[in-house]
Length: 315
Image 1 (tube, rainbow, N blue to C red):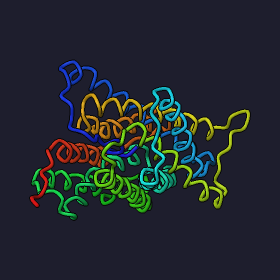
Image 2 (image 1 turned 90 degrees about the horizontal axis):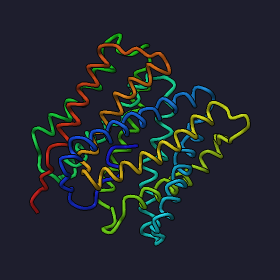
Image 3 (image 1 turned 60 degrees about the vertical axis):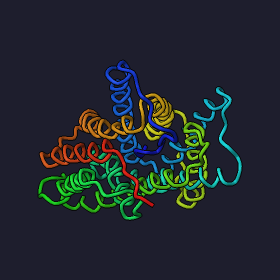
Image 4 (image 1 turned 30 degrees about the vertical axis):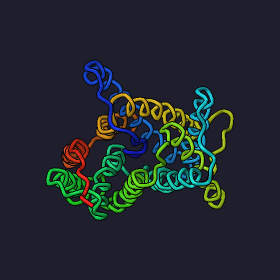
């Protein structure tokens, strides 16, 4: 679910007025709202006894299998050469196998809105890594965007009364570790994506191989979430997450191709607002003014970082 997971491999398209003003905003609203529900479902599953690794397996292998069916339908299959398999595996590890359990582990301890704030942190941290590697020239507005993002984190962890309980700060910081892995994934895609890679097939490959890599971990932790009848709450939640992840990935693929990745990346902000809504509907969560301030700061930060054009360094 990280922003940048389906980065385009070609120049951004020039969308029509209808796409920009009607279809695009509607697609962002649908993706953000439904993906935001997935975070609430993850919290529901883990609170009711599911192991985080078990939920990850549903979200990766399950969603990957559904996307593989779409690949079969269109006659497009993930490449099976070693270089591609390695790319899918590392992508899956950075985007799902490692950060997924971290997020789902902290999910029961944090409001859904705070949990979803880990998603817009990914593009901000990605820019920090890009600057550290000196692959882009410094841009003052993008740097200010990063500062807004970290200010948002500060508004969550520093003021008394921001979180329901003060000892939840450690869980917020652990959740930020997941954002770091999402940022590493973004950087890996930018640097190692095969020139002829297709966003649908590479997403399918990374989900399946990332999920397969999590199986030994789930076995060691006795973390499998097996279906039983009647279906339990965790199984229902995980199965719904599986369908959501596959369906929203398909819409995101379309949005990247039709409207551009910069536009589609704004889904991250909608996910946060949706997290507020679903947290209130499902868990009766009420946010402090500090968290609302953090959401606003994050939104400004993401807009400044993602909407500004990147300027490569001169060789």
